[in-house]
Image 1 (cartoon, rainbow, N blue to C red):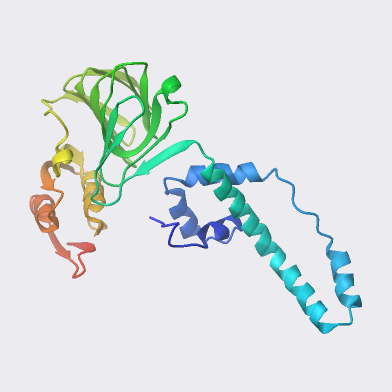
Image 2: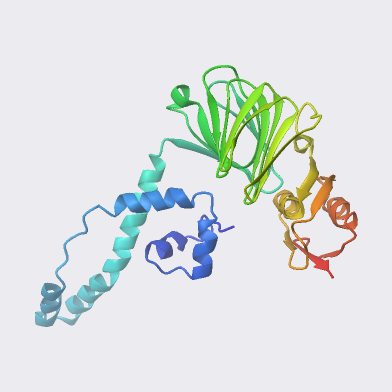
Length: 304
């Protein structure tokens, strides 16, 4: 994923339309992409500073002093850069006045977030929640990307928004996994209403709703007190292999070459979130696949 903090010129190149098609597609996957698009759109109506090119060129031509002419040309060439810089300042100015609170986790990281009403959100690796503290008492809602376990206090309706659908409850415990092509809601306590792209469903304790590529499925399972990932173990029951690979990458910050794999085959099993060698063996050796881990432990090649 693009690191906007390390690439200090990335936003400027995006604003100026200088990104490659590959960079643009990668940026569109960034969790904050829609936010930056909205900020850019909000600045488009701002008036541009008046600039008379003909007058400026005449002034340069009439000026007999080489130093002044040279300085004027510098100003002329810097004008587009200054315009871009001004746009960036506006974007970051609006960013710091943005009332939303954004909390994210990195590779292999878990984090517990206390919400204003006393509810708790436990974020799995590479996940993010966005909520508005100021309006929290009025609407109790947040946006989720990735996976999280919720312990919700009783009160007004509590809603979790994801790209796949919304989850609404009054007071309960549930887990949501909203990845790129995988959506799963597990109810651990109380009742959960799931409204996905395809249907609406009420879940009670030990019921699970799952959607893979917008194909819904609901079933029952004897759930434990909490998801196993909270205790550093990722567990799967008949889950597409692509989802398991995504979890391995999120937990260990590795890149798995899946070009030789059938990503829609189903996997049932577990792997530890604190031992890469054991995790790889648990998944790929179980499936009868040979793999090779690079010396820097960042790349995993699946052998034919």
